[in-house]
Length: 279
Image 1 (cartoon, rainbow, N blue to C red):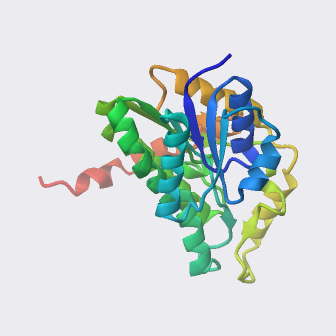
Image 2 (cartoon, helix red, strand yellow; image 1 turned 180 degrees about the vertical axis):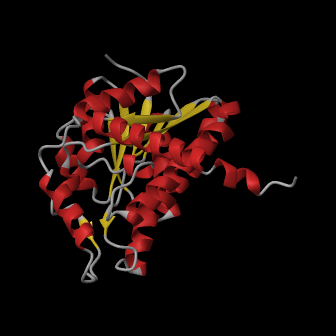
């Protein structure tokens, strides 16, 4: 099947991004795919005949590099229909362990790059009065786990940013969905991908145990990235996609538990909440 819809995907050389690129190409979509190293992306995707895929070497910390990538995409395909912000950076550690450089790196990729890509794509989407933005957050952006405070902070930011963005751009026919996956069987938990604070402070035994638990999950995660790719394709085809979508039974369970906890806390503290109003 050949389709004229054009996708722009960040962080496409591995993990969920790579699964999505391969699935899209199999189904005949046009894809602009970004990576820090274009050759790594080309090697990962494999040989593709014709102009169906545009590999882009992009520095997601650079507004100029991002803008040029969108310009090249439109010059190549004539338009953009779907933006997927998939690139991510995860770091574990206690808040006092994480240094300023590690904090900046995390927010630069997980938050600022999402903002910059949305700023770059919106002029095209407004002009054509259509488009889909799919931002990949995490279940950690709603129900975080111990030892991942900075990662959770960035993913919470993506959740809030996306929820408001969905309302802001609705009048232009642009749809925004923020996806919160659980654990998917990708390279995310491999030693080459897992990042921990360089500064280790003695005594944080619960955090170390949490990190060991996540590392031990590698290769046994319940989430299937091929199925996730299909869900994202279906999202972009839906006339009314959800603003928030939790993917994976583990994400659903953690979200349900968090909602129950929030409800309990809200009701138990209701008198205090009301006590601050003028009488």
